[in-house]
Length: 116
Length: 111
Picture 1 (cartoon, rainbow over the protein chains, first blue to last red):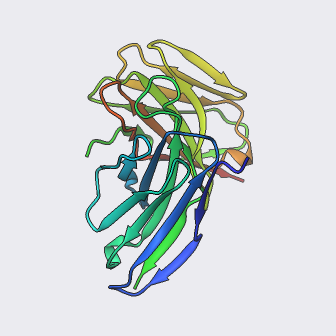
Picture 2 (cartoon, rainbow over the protein chains, first blue to last red):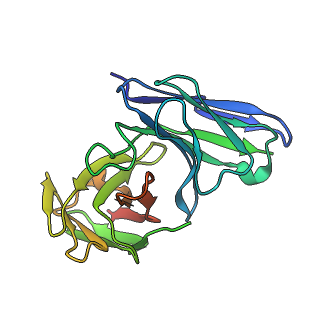
């Protein structure tokens, strides 16, 4: 039981390049999330998927797209990377979204992205 | 976007000391969660609180769900070196599918 896995762990991009961050969970969770973490800013939600087949914007969605490929996998795409997207990206999952019980989110180890 | 006010922002303590930190919000939450993040890792869930006034322990950690439902507290007793890291609170309300996170408290243990 690996929990939430993310690839790659590190990535360096040049401005304008594109890339996809991958996330998978093996806990049979319905809901998945993408966050970015910047120094002093805590965790900010980029996009989330409350259930398979649905996606919604979070607090900072501009410059990103997501795909809920199936129940296990939720990818984050940067179409044209910018230096402002240099950050640590975390994927998380929970059994359900917004519930009193089972709404607890479990996080992956993160992807450290630098855009030059 | 809303973020919770977490204090203190950082703490420098000696091994063996007790630690207290808190989180406050202008909004009511129905669930409070406390996470710990080690350097280079993702946040790990420590404690979940579901009811106003609830006091829950996990080893040396104790967390409380404030009576007003607008705050929560985390205490660590007899700190040890592996307690070093960033502690985040997070709140969840029924009308929202998303967690709201605090800005974190960075704990450092002075040798």
